[in-house]
Length: 278
Image (spheres, rainbow, N blue to C red):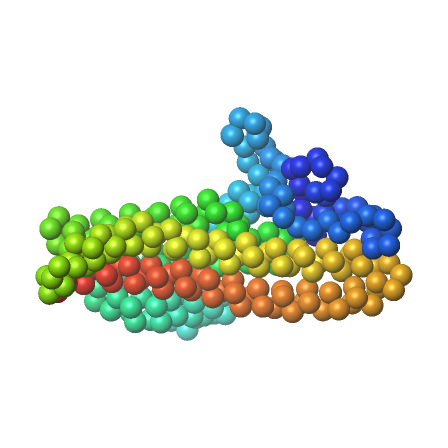
């Protein structure tokens, strides 16, 4: 499990990259922001034009998702094989359990491909965290959740204007309700900033923060297991290693859950854009 750190500071080198153990006179090399920085595989980091490990994982993940569904549906059968059955189950789960339940069958059908793509792409980006050699969740780099949230944001805003026109969209974004009386201007201001600024921000940060925290915890217990392998510390290393296994199992659940939450919120935004304002 190797994370290439950009910093040359020896205190920033991860434990499993050194011979550092407890009682050897060296401090515990805790994970931090440096654990999310990578040397460029191609290009020059100083010029901001480069290709690094998270980019490679994002590219490979995209190829895997597209390749999986292409292989499953390129020759669909009435009696599906194992691969087609798995793909249909996943597709149908998102279509019926998320899109239809949130937007409705009639309005939601056209958005099924987008939502399914988002779910499986995000899930794949998250799963890299526990894949040997890769061992890094791409969505723990905030740029990726921001771009995904921006796609949803642009769709949501454009749908709102298309469905309701300028005045209707303004009422939709501000929660206009004349029955509020004197507090209407304040309520509209709060709703405006909440919908157009806070909502897309939290949509991206929710995914990023969960994957960032999960990866940090996995690194912490993994490093601790290595660091404690010395003398009496071996007993504690065993406990730490058990926590690595527990956290890995927990991460499997969180990875799928965060992908699900992201697309569920996406459908909620779309439903809000399509709903009539009262």
